[in-house]
Amino acid sequence: MWTIVFAILVISAYILVRFRKWHFSFAAMVATAHDALMVLSFYTLFKNVVPFLEIDQAFIAALLTVIGYSINDTVVVFDRIREFLHLHHSSSDKPEEVINNAINSTLSRTVIVSLTCIFVLVILFIFGGDVLRGFSFALLIGTIFGTYSSICVATPVIIDFGKKDLK
Image (cartoon, rainbow, N blue to C red; front, side, top):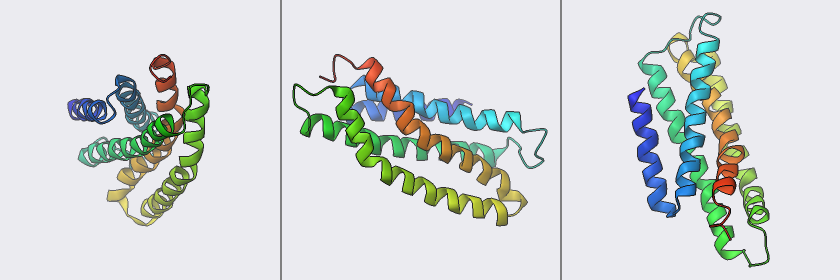
């Protein structure tokens, strides 16, 4: 648990340095924590139903991998938002519309990368054997929620907490 909390805090500090606005850092922390909690929730819900779900070192490795994947996807979306806010933003444009246009421009890339990962993880889940089944299941759930949270969790947090700074 402490490893995951430490990883999220260090990544949030990195985002704060990179984007120079606390809104981006806070949004990345919320989205990453969301992904980790969703994977943990799925493991908790299906622990007694599915025999290969064990919380062990492979699960911790999968959870840290999910955090890395999620933050990478979030940074790509944030870079596009920052680019659109600085380059395509006039004083008459609403920040929400500019951010929406930025997300629309990166949506195809995000979906294609996620689907590619999901296809590989499904094959790994089916043919990987018993040892990799729990690991690939955690990555599969994490990839789905990581893609979702980069767009549908992190971006609304930026809009809600940065209303004055985005103009």
